[in-house]
Amino acid sequence: MPSAPAGIGPARRCGHCGGPLSGGVRSDAVYCSNACAARARRRRRAFDEYAEIRAALLRGERDRVPVDCPVCGRLFIPGHPRRRDALYDRAACRATAYRARRRASTPA
Image (cartoon, rainbow, N blue to C red):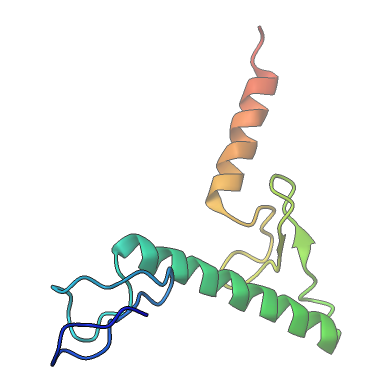
């Protein structure tokens, strides 16, 4: 780890990518950019969701059965934070499926 100038303390690193935090950031900053903060948030959300899926499977909850998204194949549990009758795990998958249905029904 490179040393910081005298009197400033150790060089601070981004909590996601490990890159250096620039000198002009707040003292409580954790990430080097908004993009890194968003990536870390998405990663945390995915980890939390997979932990919830695993816990539901281990507890044997029948109403919280994980299903595969027909577009991307990702496992998800219908319900909070989405509808109980959800077919797709994300809005992007829902839009992709809609576009595919429209393409299939449009005469050439």
